[in-house]
Length: 164
Image (cartoon, rainbow, N blue to C red; front, top):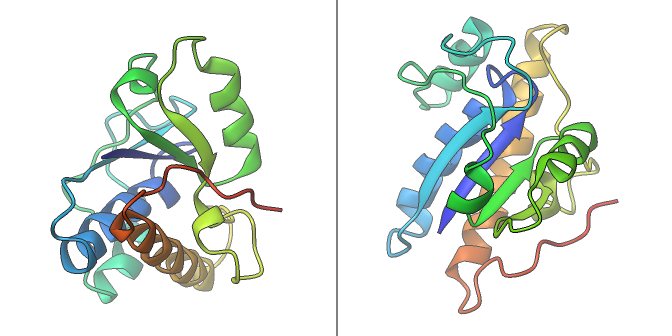
């Protein structure tokens, strides 16, 4: 199973989701051959490390984002990945517009795997305060646990639940 997490610039939400999912899946679904990556729909920060505030918030929870670098979604991602999960509806719409007709990846919202959190989108913490990064990590951890549970079923995440 290959999963790509997508946000706008690939410096806050999607790299956090990549690291959280990698860490939690190693514990909760070690038998699943899982590859995770992250990308952005915009090329604002290509080659840059994740936002220092997200790195600090993630490090406090034991997640290491230091080796990650921002990249843009590429056409081949729609063929390489099984599941492409957007952090919000705007990025999901962008992905749907860019997906080639032959795309094999299933597209959806990441928080579809956390239906009880009261949010359907992971908010962008970039322009907010420090507590926004903590809230984003709370949401990402819950959705990552939900995705791990789906991976542990016999059918896996074959169908992305509809969110909101």
